[in-house]
Image (cartoon, rainbow over all chains, first blue to last red; front, side, top):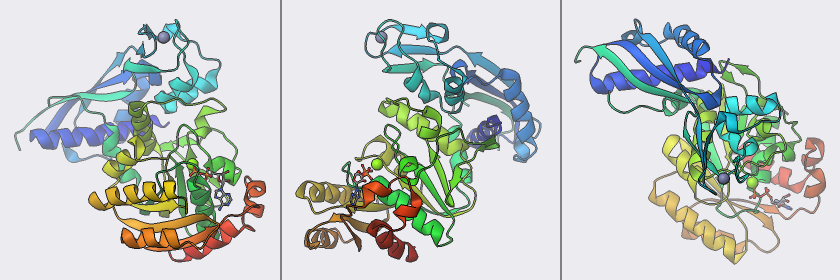
Length: 138
Length: 243
Ligand SMILES: Nc1ncnc2c1ncn2[C@@H]1O[C@H](COP(=O)(O)OP(=O)(O)O)[C@@H](O)[C@H]1O
Ligand SMILES: [Mg+2]
Ligand SMILES: [Zn+2]
């Protein structure tokens, strides 16, 4: 479960955001998970809950909203934009590698039009802390 | 809170909290022996019972697993991912994920892959973490300088004029950016080493050691028993004692 490490990173980012905003109590974390990394929404919510007890008090009562974002690739060679259903992976190991390091899609995925591995991941890569909501002005 | 945040940079400090020293093995040119030196130095440190990690940051052509003869397989996954432990060395490499496939990455993708691995790799308690740097002072060098405040560099060079010029530029940049350096290591020595000594003096960095050109090295790659018998290992074992 390397999701726990990512959940812990989200908490640390949330704490920094709370400090910057002068919040004493964070009520809600809104987190986006990208389709490319294949982290399930439910599992990530569970991961966030699991690491909560070891975090700063300001986060102790936080709830989570996890939303999913579709992956979108943009080919640097021909300009085509495409999604997850437009690429095919050979086996589960390739999916597993991308799960750990989404950039390994460049090793295994190709543009459906021109075959290039030279693409940008325009959206839906991995985990983002979209915003925090809370109270207190420090 | 305004903008969305990438959470990964916030995890790095704690991931490296148990690591005493982080040393980037660099030197700007390719093919001067950074990977052989980083891997063999890691082996020498492990043989001296030091807790050592080796992070292969040349994502587009990872080599350390080849030098050390470590099989490619997925790292164990728990609260993050665990480096493979081979010959006492904690090794992390993109090769463990990529299989035989080439990994063509632009700069932004290189940075992102680095952030991901820094955020999830569990290095534990180490005396030294060696970073095997890609050639040049591009994305990865600038990223580790920005992301790892305790970073030191060890520069590898040889007597060739094209290498000396390029190591001098690298040394000047590190000095300007206040990045500490362990010193300059001369590799593949065939001559008297004067040129590198003069370079080290010119940039006010220690001249660490000379590693001879070793024609037995190629046959020893991938076999640590043979690697330990090379001149490269012997020279680096002496250097390791000073770490
Ligand atoms: N001291 C040495 N004597 C002989 N060959 C060496 C020595 N150091 C490195 N090499 C060889 O030089 C080549 C490049 O080394 P490598 O470590 O891959 O360089 P880099 O990582 O700087 O690109 C390899 O074939 C390696 O075996
Ligand atoms: Mg190398
Ligand atoms: Zn294309």
